[in-house]
Image 1 (cartoon, rainbow, N blue to C red):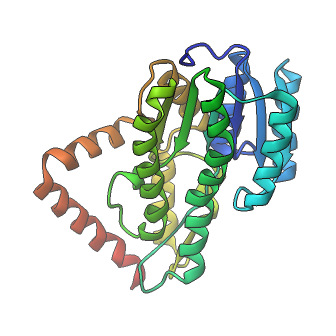
Image 2 (image 1 turned 180 degrees about the vertical axis):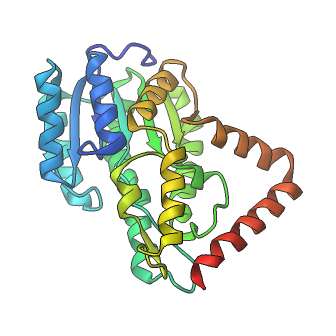
Length: 280
């Protein structure tokens, strides 16, 4: 049974304390879903729960935890399954970002990207998806990747390592889970207006540099709101789409990269040279 109507469905969302996670939690609440929410930020999570409760939504469970902590995720999963049974929708939204050239990135950047953006979702998947399979009711798995999981964006090597990885997991599970009636969606946002934009670490670059600030402001002007991303996610689930785009530029860019390899390589090289000016 596929999840076309979210009313009464048991839906888990990570990263629910802010940004896309919070907007998605509110959107699913408006659809009548029963929510199971988590975020590493306890205060932000509490604010989301309060906002949903104030508008009459149903938060069945919420717990502040770090999805990198496998034991913590497993403990929470056991508690949920004991009290509520298997879930219908599992959504991996939580993530972090850091950019930089390979000579400026430190080991901690690589490790944190893979730990949070790849292993975190894997911890959620291995704890919550097998019970969905055993329950035999179908369901939906949603993984939020990035345009950087589709395209070779400059300075995104560490971030892309995690987001391309999550894309690979999702592509395999798309077919592995089909026989169980579980759909898989891979969300690939481009620029999104979240707190992450103002706090993302750019290794080797002074964030206070006027040219860097100008570039960040340009990024923000092109960014879509978390609420628009949430609407795209809900619509993508309803239409059972695998790739869920949140802006036309990413859709076009991915199509163009596949159809016109040489022009794509030219543009990527030119973009990289433009980025390198910030290092001078």
